[in-house]
Image (cartoon, rainbow, N blue to C red; front, side):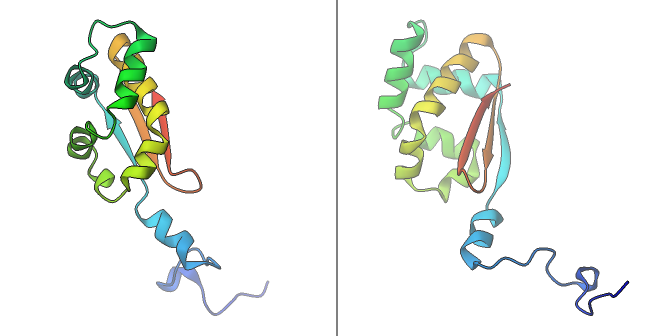
Length: 122
């Protein structure tokens, strides 16, 4: 067996990427969990508590930029994500928030690469 002199255990990078932009995307990645209380607070701020689910999702989606401040308080990484990106994923986020608040569950949010945002009701 032949070993390479640039062993990763010697303090070098574990992954060699051909593009620096890939590493820039990965360095701000992370996992966040919105508790059921936070989901309900966001829904109440949007003014959709007690509204039918499809109408609530549309209203949350329409007001997603106004809810951005509440989201940034709950998820600090949202400070570094552009509003247009959050708006792009707004429908999925709105649907998960409404479903989670209605079921009394939380929302898992994964930020990373290749898909910037992934939402899941948990």
